[in-house]
Length: 136
Image (cartoon, rainbow, N blue to C red; front, top):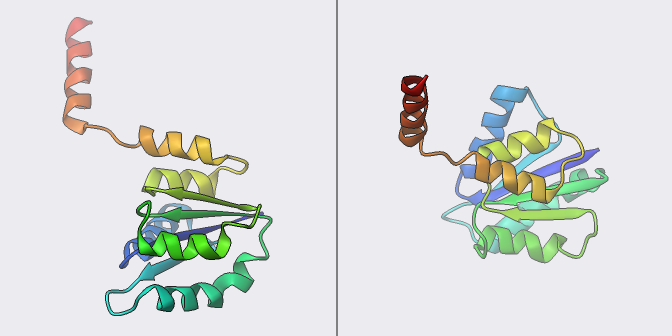
């Protein structure tokens, strides 16, 4: 079984977890940690230490961070990077996390593809669809 940890600046991680649960129902295997403006990496590390016993019960753990090189991701990376069962992906977005939670067995490369595929210029997409309809 897989566990998922979303890590971000501010409340982004908590909001993403809430959004996943709106679509997929309550998910005990999804955790969220946010770096608060008042706190710092030390506070985030304390929060991580508190949930580590829960995370360690999973065979595999996916960690999603909001920003490559940011303090939240770096703090978690320093604690978990040496663990072979941990995958870490920066640049989290909703399609990536939702796919990870709902699709057993997917790997980091697949999830990164899902993230990229979820980024669409809606106006251009709709204009292209209208052009196709006119051609028919």
